[in-house]
Every structure is written in C-alpha cells, then in structure tokens.
Length: 135
Image 1: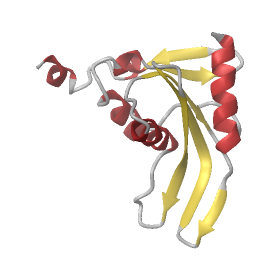
Image 2: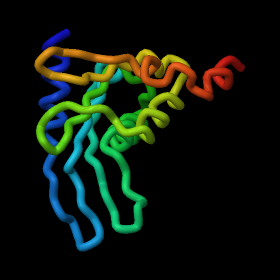
Image 3: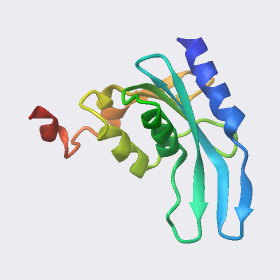
Image 4: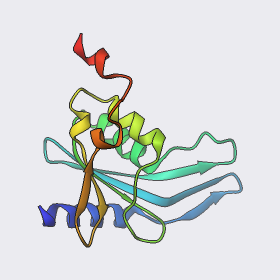
C-alpha cells in the first residue's frame, strides 16, 4: 500500500510546475493524481484564471480519467505548492461524490510521511445526493 501512495505522489509531482501562462492564467501550482479501480493513474493541474473560470487539479485529473473512459476512483493525492499533500477543495470533494455511488470509498492521502488517509464519505457524512443513487 505504501508504494502506491509514493507512486501517486511522484505522478503528481511530475506534472506540478507552477507557472504564469498569460496575464490572465496561472497553472500548475497544485497537482493531483488519481488511481482508478482499474489500476490506471491519471493526473491534472490547477488552472487559475482572472475570470474565475479555472479548474482544480483534482477535477482536471477526473476529466483526464473520464476522457479515457473510466469513472471509478480508488485513491487520490493532491499536491500543494509547498510539495506537501493536502485536502482537495470543497468543489472537488463535491465533484468526486457525484461520480458514482461508490465514490464515498475514495481514499485521500493526507500525509505522505505517515500515510494518513481519509475516506471521502468521512468528509461528507451527510451528503445531499445519496438518495439519487438509490434509483
């Protein structure tokens, strides 16, 4: 299990490259890597824009996964600008929950050294959308 987290961290680190793209866009300050239930890794970086229509690294990784035909996540790592793992933002947590009825089981790495993790459902115990998956 420890090696999986190190591999996801390395994948996120590889694409993290904070940079100014234009006077209106910055990218790559935060990066993310997800491991799907099928065993594939997808990555993404944040895109911050002057018009507030940017996108979080976690959601970009999800977009990469969906583009490649997958939709079920096992594990997620978010890498902050300081090189430490961190908690995905609230918008990303909501986005992850809506993927499928098993999304609450997604394991999120909180600390690389200690391998401390949390399940998405622990962060959103009273999530509003559970009943929609019951149909």
